[in-house]
Length: 599
Image 1 (cartoon, rainbow, N blue to C red):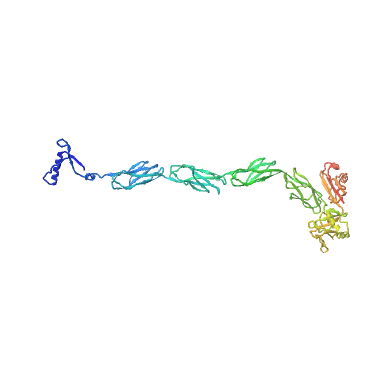
Image 2 (spheres, rainbow, N blue to C red):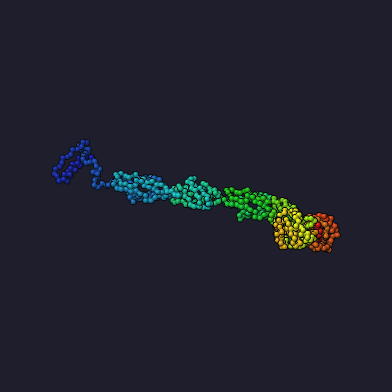
């Protein structure tokens, strides 16, 4: 109960005022005063008003209504510009993490609603209000909490140049790995808060093929948005294919790989221009060096993460293959070397194959096609060259002829002509036996057998030629293609192209010519020898075989020197030199013509 202490004079005056106000004349008795100092003691009087203790009862009608503050605390504020408001107004700007109080106080029982009007920036943040709504009681509100967190953004960019099937592993700030398998955009899984740094790097480079990826714009500080500008450019590693060149003596060697040419001037190592890893290479010789042939080993493959150094280019010298043809009377002989590189020779003299042979290879000269009326044989036909080969000797003569029973028999591979024509065409005398002898020969088995043995064939065939029996036709004996050769299958008057005629010819005439300094060879048919020298002249003779004549210059020793070297031989060689014959005409280019008779 509230107590009012007044002086006694004031108490009396107060009581009188009350009586007047109430319209009574009586003045009430003075109340009993509380113990304490009395007026007589000079102290105040104490009046017990008897009022209740309710505060509202103590307020006068003109007292102000009490109000209360609304506020709280802000946590985690890093940015600037945070504006809070209460009940959609009464804005307050908060600059740092601290307590705050709105300017306007509220009466008890009034609602409050604290919200974020403006979120902070620099760095951007998101602030969330907790406990921001309610009703004001009879005390200040200080329990509003505003928690601010800095915004986070993604970090990413684009990968370019990544080879098909390859992959690159990127990381940010030493972690948060991301694998990229094709040219495309990428984003790290973990966002980075605004204001914090990022550092993008390559953790694992692509390896199939090897590539190097370079990051551009990979470091910085996250601002107020996603980072999308990081560029990762990948380029394929490049390697060389090369090796070693050995044995190079010539000039002009050029190696090629695809469209790239590299001249090679000396022995040693070489490298072709770089290529992308995983690409193929195929090194070949584009241009051979002079007088050499170079061969590439291990020249093709695929680059696989390193330079290739095991390609070998070995060069060896090249040599020409050739020799001399003698005894060729008419037509031509076709020669081959190593089964190819055909060479047609139509006259006596030297020859050289077009394709040279390397020092590490062999040559093998053979006759592919014999002349029409003669057969040729080869001496020194094969070997391994160390210098240009010039000693292959091709000797042509009447080697299609054999002597059987004292008679010279010769094969005519042309056919469809008489023996008179055949023998004359080959430089032999026409047949000297009569038809009776011919007729007898075809019916004598031993004659056919003797011919078979003489020509080195069996009793059946040599190609289409069988000599198991014979037939008279046009002064020639033709061998049937039927081994049994019964009468019903004897040859008709026209000799078939597949049949070889065998003719008895007379003595052969063998001729040879050669220029001064040359070795001139005379060859008789097999089984016959040179019985006489019909003509010999060292000087300036003219004419052809069978009609040679002396020229304005002639050595008188010609006949003697040739006879001494040739009589009784199947083949003889005479050097056309002044040492053998003397010099019949000084200063003139001389030649040697020989015609021999063979039996």
